[in-house]
Amino acid sequence: MNRLFHVPLSPFCRKVRLSLAEKKIEVELVEERYWEQDPDFLRRNPAGKVPVLRMNGLTMAESAAICEYIEEVQPEPALMPREPAARFEVRRLVGWFDDTFHREVTSKLLYERVNKKLMKQGYPDSKNVKSGAARIKFHLDYMGWLLDQRRWLAGDVMTLADFAAASHLSALDYISDVDWNRNAAVKDWYAKIKSRPAFRGILADQVPGFPPPAHYADLDF
Image (cartoon, rainbow, N blue to C red; front, side):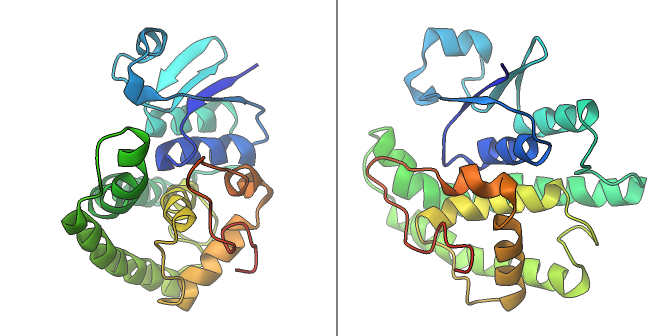
């Protein structure tokens, strides 16, 4: 059995989970409290980060590399286009969400509100929370601009770029930090992507001490 060591609200873990689910690859989910620095886990990934995927006799870390591996061993349904320019655009947007969006928004909101409590690292930094709440508006507007020109974020078909974005936004939506009324195109995009069967596991997540809002698992908001 394939095994994924993960944290439910980690957007990087969610991206891998969505890729596996979209391709109907069965996996056992093992919640890993990586911040406790368990020696067995550190042997799997000395970097001490999740996700870590055990599959086909391999133990793999780093979400981007994992998703590329999944795409190569299970190419259908495709999450990467064939054309080099289109593949570049997908990788650019995956990088945008996993780097820029994560640094400016996810780390300022999700990590301050949830991770600090789980890791017993004190209270949220109000300056970081305010910064994240301000920057998410820019990112939602940018997504709206992309979706005004395309059916999906990277083009006319759903790709890993959509899963990367949805992974971050779904984690933030769990703590009610996304203003879905800011941009109708983004709201319609998210409703479309979260209605996919691959999203069911994500919408079923429950984090003790952090109940999701009523709309979180509602496919019609």
